Image (cartoon, rainbow, N blue to C red; front, top):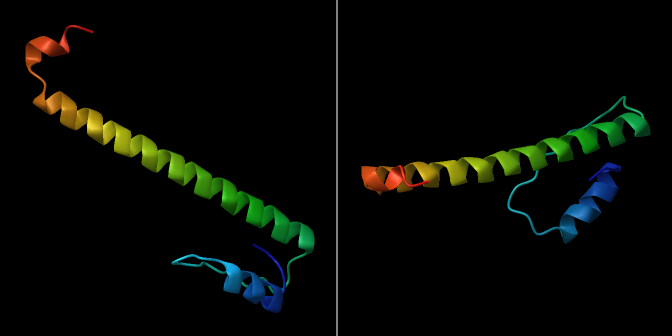
Amino acid sequence: MTGSPKEVGRKLDKLNADQIVAFPLTHSTARQVKALAETIANIIQLLELRQRQYEHESLEVLVDAFMPKERRTLT
């Protein structure tokens, strides 16, 4: 989300979110702001993906811990 403080404020009023992170940029061009916003959005997507992978890996470890040893070699 980018824009002037008033624009962002109006957008935030319509948003249903528990937490917001804001970056005041006093000397940035519109192009720089857009690039930063896109970069942060991509990082968030990667973090969400990694979190899902971690949860899946954790579940696999738990399942392996409870699986009898003779069943582990059947794959």
